[in-house]
Amino acid sequence: MAAPLKVAFAGTPEFAAEALQAILRAGFSVPLVLTQPDRPAGRGMKLQASPVKQLAQTHQIAVSQPTSLKLDGKYPDEARAAQAALMADPPDVMVVAAYGLILPQWVLDLPRLGCLNIHGSLLPRWRGAAPIHRAIEAGDPETGITIMQMDAGLDTGDMLLIEREPIRADDTTATLHDRLAQLGGRLIVEALELATCGGLKATPQPADGITYAHKIEKAEAAIDWQLPATTLARRVRAFDPFPGCTFTLGDQTIKLWAASVVNASGAPGEVLHAQGDTLVVACGEHALALHTLQRPGSKRVSTRDFLHAAQDLPQHLT
Image 1 (spheres, rainbow, N blue to C red):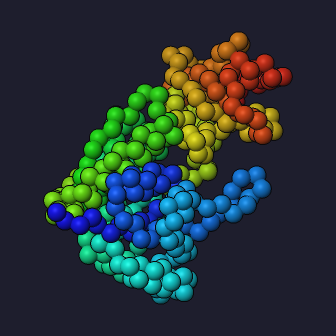
Image 2: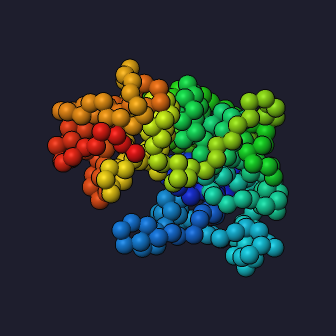
Image 3: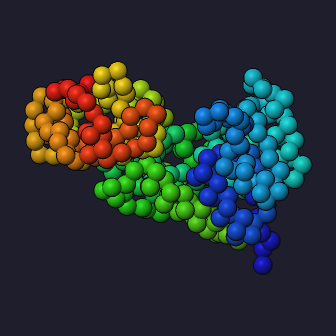
């Protein structure tokens, strides 16, 4: 029986922590974790360790947090320290999940089995930084997890394992993220078990169907009522929990967290109905019923509670 692989791990957010937990639970040795430097977070903006770092510390795993891994880049000392940490106990393979740093060639070449990436889409669709958000925003009926052999390109490596996951009509990025994180953890363990006995088979990505999931920008949050209601409803789900969809009400920026399409019409931005638990706004095509909203500094509330607190609702929203 082949010995278990020695696995270095690189990841940062909760999506990656789920995978690391699965790898540890499966009994693989993880001598080193790479994760992003601590960042200010919360109301006090205190430095906070990433979910991956917190999990690694719980299991007493060594942690390296370089700002960059480029040996000839802006932070060469940090990169060299990470290199020394990796070479002190060379891994058989590195697993990468939502790490947030580009891996230079020396990292890709260091483990004898290379670097395996857990990607939250059915490659080659939605290469890039925000595959879960963009799949919902585009109205895709399904997505999934691809375990990929990393190369120097942006999510261009050969596919090793792939599993599909339906996108439900009420899925937000938050709910879909959680299911894909669990799926990713299960699939990477399967990949590592296959790699242990030489059973992984690589398949090049198809040349057709390539799309890019560009990073979500805060500027995308503002609602353009000229767009079709179906587009906006998908965007509301895709941008939950970040950055949310917003419109202005007087001098306040209101966040919209849940909405549905209504077969009604009017001038884009026109408030068609605002009474009880119903707030309907016309769009470029059909209309949007707003269900859950949030004022600055407040919690999310139902439309009924929002309208009850609203003093003068304008005839048009911007």
